[in-house]
Each structure stands twice: as structure tokens, then as C-alpha cells.
Length: 193
Image: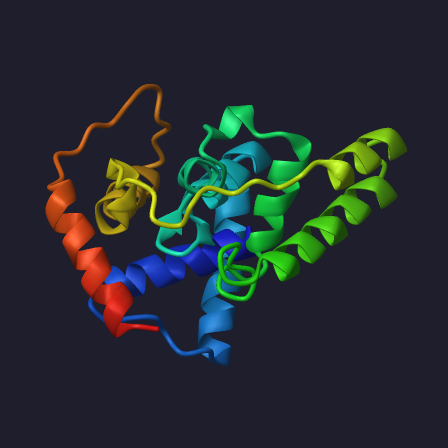
């Protein structure tokens, strides 16, 4: 819930035009209060779902579904244990464990995630070994744009929806100019290392 509170705080700051707020004691206290309120209002499953739908998984990719599609070319429900652990490792630092720039780091982090799962008996020793042995074939970085690539739009819809305490029971469709979105992403990628 603390990580979700941090993401929600950052989203709120971006929406209000303040950018990412600097780390401060005030920010930490605000996030702690937000986390407590979230825990009182939502189940652990709802909090985890909200976090995974907002978390950055890879460059310009937000949410588990987009992360699964961008990194492995599959929907989240089709991820193997090894792929799930690989994505979970990226959460620790999406830039530091960027699978296209730092594949070996991401793979080492995946191993730590699997070790932790094994140590906590969440997986069997056989599952652990099988996941370690599974080759990680990631998608080419320049994959075709998808509507999920329009992070700003997805972020705004999720924030508004979650703020009202609703759960998605279907599909939300947005109209986005993907060609324009791709052009803007290329410009940003060229300008921002």
C-alpha cells in the first residue's frame, strides 16, 4: 500500500502540473497517511491490482498488462512464473533493470525474486529451478504502438476511476491518435537519454 500511495501521490502531482514532488519528510508522511486510508478502504487484492495497473515496468510502459505485452509479447494472464518474476524484478527500478539496456541486471534481479519466493515457500524447489532454466526471450524494443502506449490517457482514466472507488468490470475504450503518439514518443526518446 505504501508503494501504491507513492504512485498515487506522483500521479496527483503530475495532474496538478507540479511534476514529480521532491523527496521530503512531508511527502513521506502524506504517503503514509494515504497508505493507511487505502488499507482501511480496500482489500489487499484491490490494492495489489491498483498498484500493478499503475506501476512502471519498462521504458514508457505502465501497468502489468502493458509490461507483459511490451516485454514478452503476451497478455499478463499468459505469463510464465519466470516471466512474472522477471517483470516483478523490474519494479525495483525500471531504469536500472530496463530489459533492453540492462538485460543481465534484470535477469539477476529475476533470480533474487525467485529465491525470495522459494525461501517463503511460495514456489517449490522444482518450480524455482524450472523458472531459472527458462530462457528469457524479450520482444524487440521498437514494438508496434498500442493504445496502452498512451500512458497519459490511461493514467488519467485510472486515477479518476480509482478515486471514485469503482472497479472495472469490462473494457474502457479511448480514442487516441497512435501515429501522433508514436511520433511524440520518438521525439522524447531522441531528446531524453
